[in-house]
Length: 120
DNA sequence: AGTCTGACGTACG
DNA sequence: ACGTACGCCAGAC
Image (cartoon, rainbow, N blue to C red):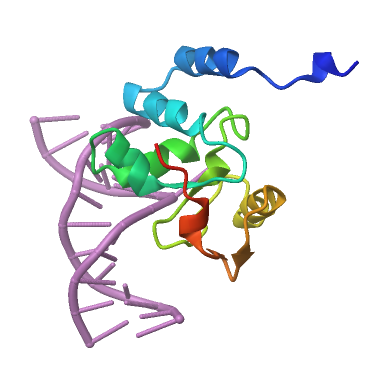
């Protein structure tokens, strides 16, 4: 009976991303993030590397403008140091979301980051 | 085309 | 285990 409240399918989401007026680089970032499962995280650096680039700062810039948050789960992107990093709706909210997915965070850092890293 | 700005990373103190 | 300085590069003007 809640079928109409079903989340946007991944396929629909990918189409939505394609329709955005963003650059290819930015859309590629969203595509990558769209496949991170609940309870897992990736780093800005790994996203850039996956795109064959060193532009990890630009990845952050793309996140900052993410028009599909939190459907495109940009809250699952953290610093390579394990620090939470920034979030358009505030670090508090980012931490709250991550904890709700089972990720342990203390003093703004992910405890045992390796355990939660999503590998491509 | 030139310049500036970041949801970053890393080295170094 | 901090903070800071500097390098990085795509995107916005």
